[in-house]
Image (cartoon, rainbow, N blue to C red; front, side, top):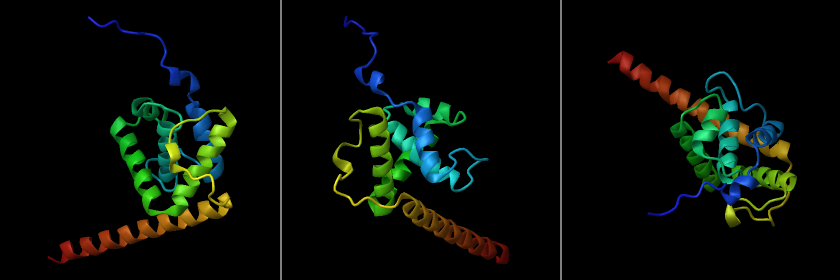
Length: 158
């Protein structure tokens, strides 16, 4: 029978506290905690969840508990959404990389995200970057609302 080790995992000692990750995201993007799924708090929270998983090495269950008892599947969805946005939007990728660098500088460690963040990316004005991302999120939300209203009108007409 294999012996079970109860010693702390080596990366557990290097974890960046969830409160520090949340504070860094909140300082750059705005509140991560809002009523329900209000925008942009939802996007900001998803960025924080992504960083908590990939930079802080936290479990999805722990992250969900920190964010007002959200379910682990909600955390997984948020992480997947940010991964998809990073692949499709260079602004989101640069934002995540800047936040990662900031967190790692504060905590002197080499955590997660591997070579994904290119150190040769030009330093972008974070306020400008955050505004551009917020505009894109707002535009997508408006488009979804417009489509839902259009679909709702078709159903009423039938």
